[in-house]
Each structure stands twice: as C-alpha cells, then as structure tokens.
Length: 355
Ligand code: KG4
Ligand code: ZN
Image 1 (tube, rainbow, N blue to C red):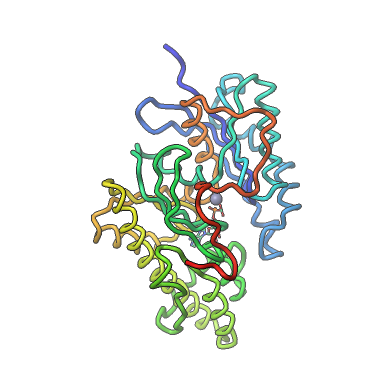
Image 2: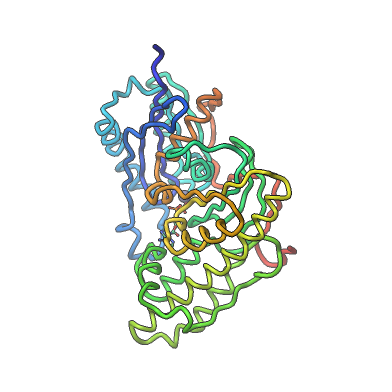
C-alpha cells in the first residue's frame, strides 16, 4: 500500500518558531504527529511588542533545534518527509526569510517539494486539523495583524467581505493592555483582568458600528482608552477598564458578524462560520459569536486554542491541501511581507477611506 503523505510545516512569520509534522489520513483529518511551538514572548516583553531583528535572530538560533524536536516527537526520519511547507508571508521579512530559507535547504537536501504558504491561509484552514470541512464557509480571521470577514470558496479562493480600516483586533487588545501597564502579549491578560471588572463602568465608542457593512474600525476606541487612562488609579480601575473594553469589542463583533452573515447568505446556501486567529482563543469572544450563530442557524467552528494562536500544524495542513493538488513552488520563490488572501479586494486603510 502507498504510504500516506507526511508534511513538515514551518512557521516563523512573527515571534513564534514552530515546526509540525502531520500525516494525511485519507478522508479523516490528518494525524498531527508533532506540533512544537517555541514562543519569544520573554525576549520582546521589555519592548512591549515584537522587535523584528531580535525575533529573526532567535528564529535562526532555534529553527534546527525545534525541527529536531518535532522529528523526535513524531518518530519520523527526515527521509520519510514528502514535502516541506513554510510560511512565506505576510509577516516580518527578516523572520519569514529564516523559515523559508531553512525549508528550501531541506527541500534541496531531501529532493522533496517546497510549498510556500500564506500564513492567513494557514489560519483559514486550521479547522481542517480537527474536522472535515466543506467549502464554502464564512470566516472571521482575528489575529495580531489581521481582522477580516471572508467567504472561503476553496483553496486559494477567497472573497473578502469586510476588514478593519485601521488597527487589527489583536493589536487593539495589545495596545490597550500596554496602556494599562499589562505585560505583552496583552490579549490574554485583558481577558483575565476583564473577568474581575465591571463592564458597565466605562463607555467606549464603537466606530462605524452602523455603517460600512462588515468593515470595522478600532483606532478611535484606543484613543478613548488613552483619554480614560487618567481615571485608572487602582487595581479595581484596571479590571473595570479591561472589562469595559472587552464588552465594547464583543458588541462590535456581534453586530458586524450579523452583517457578515447576511452578506454571506446573499451568495451562499451553506451555513458554516469559522473563527480563527489568536483572538479566537478568547472565551468571551467565543461565547458571543456562538450566540449570534445560534440565532442565525449557523454552525460555528473554533479551532482548539493551540491552533488559534500561531503554530506550524496549520501551515502543515495548508501544505497538505496544496500537496494533494501538486501545487509546489520553485526554490526562487521570494517571501512576501504583504500577501492578501483576496487579491481583488480594495485597499481600505488610512485616512480618507470611503466605505
Ligand atoms: O494569530 P496570532 O497568534 O498571531 C498573528 O498572526 O498575529 O494572534 C496573536 C494575537 C495577539 O494580538 C494576542 O494578544 C491575541 O492574538 N490573543 C488574544 C487572546 N489570545 C491571543 N486576544 C484576546 N484574548 C485572548 N485570549
Ligand atoms: Zn497568525
């Protein structure tokens, strides 16, 4: 019997050095043989955000060790790997280059195909690690650098329905946390603090809530928080502000998801909604979106928390999908710091944007 393909996935687009090995499992989701993630949060904490040069150096230091760890854990020899998939964009160019060059070197040494993966496609396909998923589906991608509603029609076939016109949602969580003096990465900290606070204490704006379709804006919210900062004196104030901030985000996501569902329904009979990316790890975000889907008779799927935040298993699964279609890349493929999923979507960032 022919061996089921084994894919090695590499992720180094930002501040996680990650390697995963997965094996195709016929009609079932793939077997995840290993999924190693080494986070650099300790390196970047004192800067309050990712320091690109240090991130790249740390990827360089660790990529071979993490790959060895992934091989050991999976009990797979390099010679058994059928293809090497690596995140080739979007992301920090110095960081992407480490993973892609390492992947290309492995591909040459093993004489196996190299597959360039769009990090966002990794997030979009991440539920395939755990469940069989039919196209089309509605996707909300909420990560540190991206916030988009998309119709996923198939592999490499995306239609953007809405996007943020300024900051990404994860970035908004991180910046708010920084204003409150909470440690990087702020998203999980805000969630933790919000549990103890009064969500009705502060009233924050919800920019473009009732216009612009399912496009979103978070920059005004951040400015309002900056203004409220002088009211934050005690620990209780921090809890209250975190809770009020999170409640505002939940209200925006609720409204915009309802609009996105209506948009999606105009062109599709399917009723599946996937929420992926780091912010999808937030339990209150999950609960709010579950309730919206219940109301609209949509089935909601969240990847497990470890597959929401950056990881290489999602890169490997996107690699496997491309491997099945023999979509390989040449070794002169250049990393793409900007790489949209829907290349036809209008650029909607910056002042003067007309929605
Ligand atoms: O997908 P991801 O790991 O990396 C990117 O591709 O950006 O997302 C990271 C983002 C960070 O902004 C982080 O603060 C946010 O996801 N995040 C959260 C939570 N866990 C991670 N935001 C809110 N609540 C969480 N529990
Ligand atoms: Zn990501």
